[in-house]
View 1 (cartoon, rainbow, N blue to C red):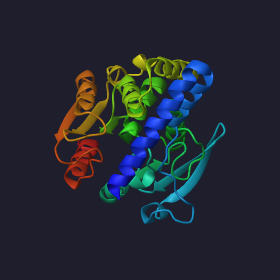
View 2 (view 1 turned 180 degrees about the vertical axis):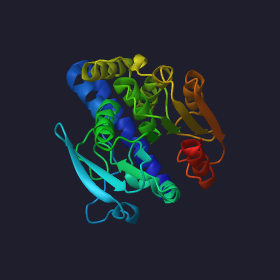
View 3 (view 1 turned 90 degrees about the vertical axis):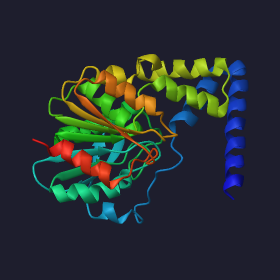
View 4 (view 1 turned 45 degrees about the vertical axis):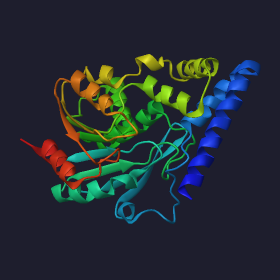
Length: 284
């Protein structure tokens, strides 16, 4: 069955790419719109209100409204130490379950959110600039000192701090986070076999949408401006985000430490790693 699913997915993605390639010559604006749509709309990560995981049921649930979006938030009340958890692509706040169990032992206040178009939050499209706006809404309301992001959530944390320069952030932790957005785009191009014309249309759409060129959207560039402490963990067996991406960020961020792991893959779920993060956050 797994092989059948892989073949079906491969056929679907290549068919989408072929269609967009054809449209790029006939209707370029429509081609750009379609290419961006398939790039930015998560297929997984939604939650049903009557079937949320137990770890999220334990939290205080609140919906924040920002612009036209409803942002689902979760808070586990504790002391004045506040930690914001930012999940990645095709996921939701429940991905932090194992870590939350350990974090609760520190008596900290833990805050998490569902990203745009994921969990119980509204929206269809997931993109870093919009996600950063959601993060900013939580930062303004809860004012956490610590922020932790996984994968695209980590990339969002980097962009958020670069964009908003929040002086309240004392420490940041990145887990399996990408650095260069152009690499993400190139991987998408290869996955659905976009031709060069369609790929150029996609990049132009990105610039039109966010007023920043993909080449300028760089985690290492953002991190090079930080002077607070950071912790970056990346697994050498990560098949989703290259290990070198984590190294790039660490090399640019002078006040950050780097943890290399093996065998944890992209998820980086590991009690020993979580204990190291706790020590980093609460060391004197």
